[in-house]
Image (cartoon, rainbow, N blue to C red; front, side):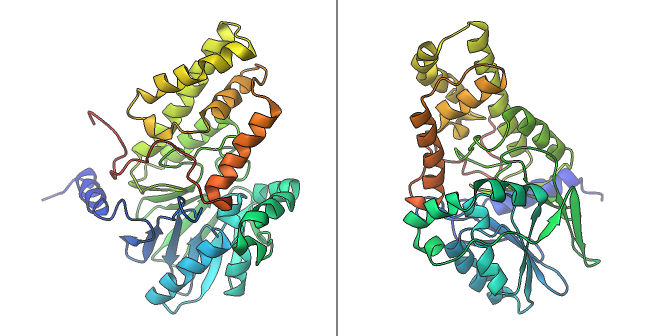
Length: 344
């Protein structure tokens, strides 16, 4: 009897759901392929993954230094193979500031060339800001990735193949996806998240939608986001639809020739309207005003938030990713492996 792959994938995803909501728990996605949901609420940590290849371990995301220290013993509990590579999916601190810890373990930090470019643009100022509120950053040192790629980089031992891809601008200008074609597992970094974690200040919403479309064409069975629970391919579509709704709402404001005060007065009602869609409600959080403004500016409008408000939005994102250990969303991420998809 031939069993459809979709049926097998459904069973596999359902089995993942048993451990779905557990933070700081190692989840086996496939033989020698693991996912670890980071504690963003109390520690500011991102999610991690790792693949145990024939001769070494490849880690997805360097995390903050304390996040790296947390998962290294968990990796060593599973294998005595050396940790040789750590991928920075982008330049933000919760995904790259742990580089020095991995180097200490003998690993080489890997990233798209855009990560180095953005680090040169923003650092060491952001590192110094983070160090004021995080002892783990203050006690470590900024380490840039040294193995760089432009479009793609492959790891292949004959059993496991891990493809690193840059599909274009998204959350930042240097986002990487880690794709395991044999297992159909996709690690996205913050190019795709499962909850109210989208910071748009360093990226481009319009291009982000296109980048997610490229990721969707891989047809993954399992999607491992940069923050929030693991899910399936519908997560990519849901995040696209959230951004499309942002752009649609911004266009309405443009067409109405709304001024700054008018837009500010409408933000909460627009936010409530967007939240009515159960497929994208989990993406609506405290940073909504900044997201709407970004979409409005990309359409040719003028920024409607005061500079101080905009800086506060950026700091909210940084704080949420560990500077003051506060969660920056007011909607909890979906608890199901198939993220909030009524009627599906």
